[in-house]
Image 1 (cartoon, rainbow, N blue to C red):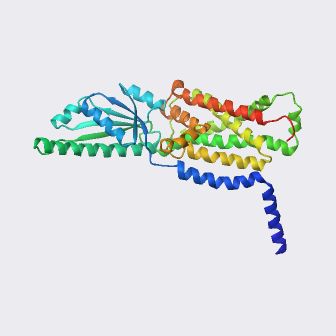
Image 2 (spheres, helix red, strand yellow):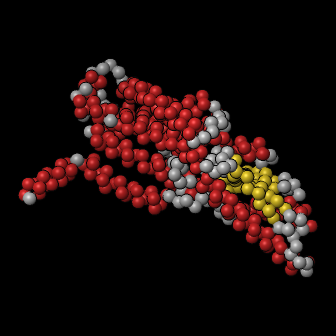
Image 3 (cartoon, helix red, strand yellow):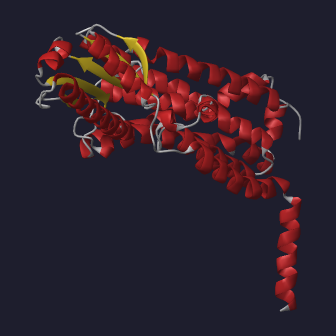
Length: 374
């Protein structure tokens, strides 16, 4: 028994000396509680919405105001056709669109059934459910109010046919989960593997004693950083290709857009993920610490990027934090290209974010990588 207590005491002493591991053990549950308790919310609100008002009457404008007053929709623009709705959705500016028929106001006046259409971006099933349910409840309530007003003001029976809502789902009309999940898995798998690969690079060389070869080389720190990133980009492309092929052949995930554009955007994302791992490798003293930091980084990516939970449902502070994660922007890019057929101009904003993140992380890794023994 004494030997067991002695061994246990020895392990505790070693753990106390490993301050990085001890800090990770304490910080991980704290971060999990904060992320789950504060940022995660499946109740989607503030859905970016455009309105295609073909009637332009007082009644149609009133319907748009009522829609926004629910708090579930943010009216960002009025458009003049379905082409503009499609462009707004492919660029990520809108997730839903309200289409008002030309005779909406006159149909309500004479007691005929008036129909409005709600177009929803089906690439996010959670947004679809929240958008259609809220709109249906709003239309039903507004229709009942109009019937009651017709009865009280004109003394007529509430024979008005009311307002009908036609929900149309674009880009994933069957609402198959695989169509939404598989493109996102490309980013998650690349984040997990790429960060981990380079996170252990410098730590491994330090443990093996080969760091001196880099120290005495004429290469500058930024050249060493880029040189360590380039070989792994090929591995990232191989993984991405495997997921795309399996997703398309096994799960029937569509590949609507340009694969060339997707691979070009993926190179920036892969390089940014590799650079993040390299920053971790300059901080960690051992490969074990580097791996722990990689898993620690993966958690906020999974929770805040929009892979598991709706991005619009998160608090504004969490959304700003998520903008600094490469996975947030790559998820939008890969879903828009594969499911919506987005072109360069419709993903250029997200690609710009990735470029900025890549530049910052590479610079940070170069600064952290000191050409001397640590």
